[in-house]
Image (tube, rainbow, N blue to C red; front, side, top):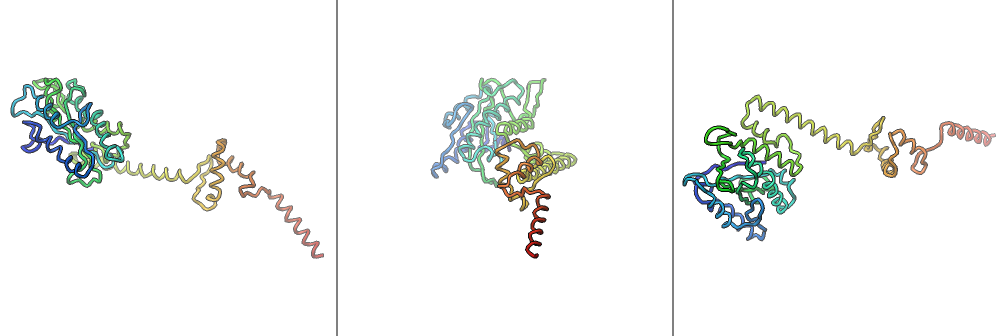
Length: 321
């Protein structure tokens, strides 16, 4: 999961004035999709979908109490799942869009509010989201992502909050609290895994990527060693799962159903085991099979075979005489 805060600029991310410039940019994809006859997603917030741009602009631009002309009035956040994460979120664009809105509402905004350490809740954050389905300069086949615009002030228009502050949970001075971006990224990742039951590999984690980008040589080597160990463990698990599919494990031995002889008895064995669960081990299974002449087993003992051979020899001698 890639989450970033685009820095304020003189372009569309100029956040010292009205939000309309950024909102106009966020709607650029809608016209193309409508011309193609493909559905579009409107703006959304914590409780509502398909909101108009004018509604969003008015709400953000009027929530600026006690802010100076040059102060930031809002901030932008990008939330971009990886291709594997998108596959977990749904198989269609509609499913992925609904999953993204659920993720924003249940994980991103609650973690955003909590991370300021000011006692804020998800209801205190004034935000709007816009989902895009295309991503320029991306190699991903699936490109759905979300743009968030978050007000600098809380819903009460009294508390200033900034995710770009350098303060980290300060308790003294004019500014209390802060925003620890590393904690936010880690918790947002854990929240995704919880919400979608996603089995994240080490190389996909924020900890791994952050260490490989910003860590020391020692930390990078340790992380690489951990990835090698995890890769071997995954390989062993996959091999074991493949083996379990093609073998029947008994208490004393393993029957490989891939061998020619065992392939012949695989069907009757499966039928018998499905009818009864009373076979505690492989010995009892073959004991049962040995009594069934209808599936191709010879029930004659060695003593019976010797007597048959003796009678045949005796008949042969009589013919000669």
